[in-house]
Amino acid sequence: MRAPLVLLSALALSGALSACATGPQRFPVQATRFHYDAVAQRGTVTVEPLPGGGPASIEYKTYAAAVEAELLRVGFTSPRPGVKADYIATVGFTRAPRALPPRQSPIQIGLGGGAGSGGWRGGSSVGGGVSFPVGGSGAREGVVTELSVRLRHGADAVWEGQAQSLTDTTAPDADTPSIAARLAQALFSGFPGDSGRTIEVK
Image 1 (tube, rainbow, N blue to C red):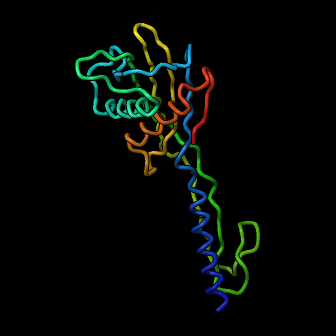
Image 2 (image 1 turned 180 degrees about the horizontal axis):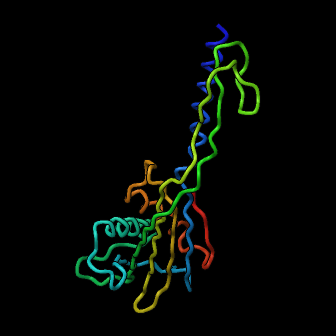
Image 3 (image 1 turned 120 degrees about the vertical axis):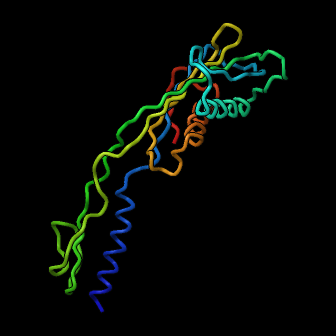
């Protein structure tokens, strides 16, 4: 009965290690804000694309909606139809492919039918058995997304910020709405934020 118990224990361990060796799927967001005053006066705000960006795409509208939601959360309001807003928030974003950090090196676990104990490669192993790798290595596909927002009051820019993060394209929250929401939430965290300071939001 001892050999089956050893086999089951090794299999359970391999499953746990495999989960640990896959590497992170979620990376923190880095956000930097700049402003000349504390933007103490809130008011109505309209979200617009950066000048010269062409017609607004569906993807842009997703980022714009995420920014608008955060502006409303921190105290701005939407203008009445036909009324000019007090503030204009221009929104832009970029996406670029980026290789993710490699996963942990594969680990070999020995399994066998004889009595004994399993161990890491280089240690004791079970009988003559077989071995198989846990986890893997090699490049994985990711994407770096940057969100930029500039808040203008009249002709003057009173606040601007950039937020960027690396995303594992295989992660469950790698869709555009999730990425846009994460970046916007980090960018407006503690609005208006400390001017010139970069924060990291997990």
